[in-house]
Image (cartoon, rainbow, N blue to C red; front, top):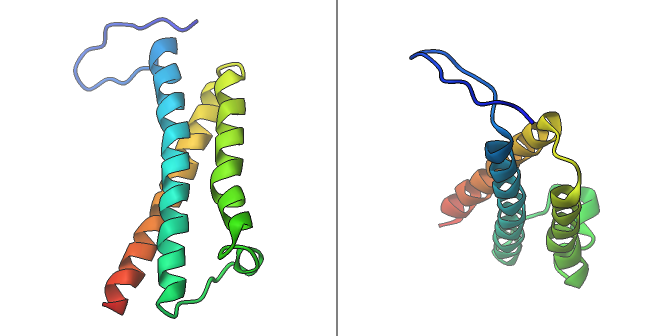
Length: 116
């Protein structure tokens, strides 16, 4: 268990176990929410005449397998992650995946705006 140290202004320190646990939970929830948004926005764009650029997802995004892949897998992986031992590197990697998915969702919103 890490120890929280009182820091002077301008210094940074490592996250406590409690903070890391909270961050892990928020990152898992964020990943599921961002995947759901990606699914909804992508389907909307496809209905408006857009094209799925991922050739593997293009095969399944419109059907029920799209829901399984975009929601089911992140939920299962998230539950697995929440029950695994707490590791700082893994939590930070999950946070970076959220940043990447935020980019995907932002791009989808941009494309929706361009379609009018």
